Image 1 (cartoon, rainbow, N blue to C red):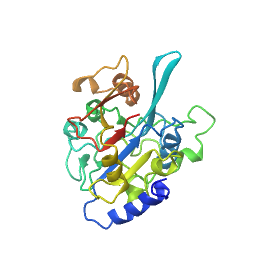
Image 2 (cartoon, helix red, strand yellow):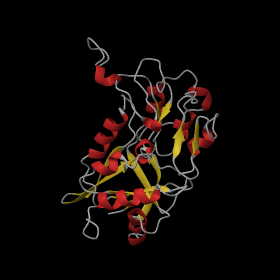
Image 3 (cartoon, rainbow, N blue to C red):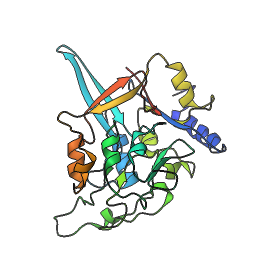
Image 4 (cartoon, one colour):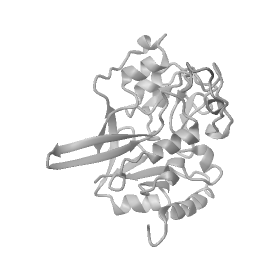
Length: 278
């Protein structure tokens, strides 16, 4: 609760106000003091985006510190950080407004599936392991038939994308996009509304009345960002080595979707996802 109101109710009002602006600057704060690692956000994201095997927009890292009997655990949700200086965009050979990937006016890093050539360079460039190529897999592959629920369309970026073999977005890079298709119709991101602990705060960070702005201000001594995400044994394949590699092979090499979050006071990528540390 925040000032005797459910945080979702407060943020819904913030969202309505922000949509009246020409350029709302979306951001998210995740309060790790509240996160219990239930992974409701992960489940909600999978359901909302119809995520196929090998694609995980939102994951939760689990860490343990100390030694018995003084042991503590930390759960860290990770999504695309919507960086203001996104290395994934810099790495793209077809970057730019309306092309394969760019930073839009509302501060979200977006992907145009039709323009993406599936080279995998952005996957390697992302320090947060937030991007992967869609290899076209189905959960029910190898069974008597691919079930109809796997063919249900997603509505990413406000467009209908049926799941069919060898059709877009299969073969393209995919990642979290703050549920822009929901934002456009006045709905908060699925991960935000599903969290039973109200650990996620979302809104226009430049609106001083918004809860996301207030949460950053009220917890400024505890605020950190992700500097990177690591996976033991990960490698960074060269651009030449990417040619001919399958989607799952690239993901395996770079360590997608990551294991160990690395926090810092700031990061050169200028992320828009902030964390309140325990």
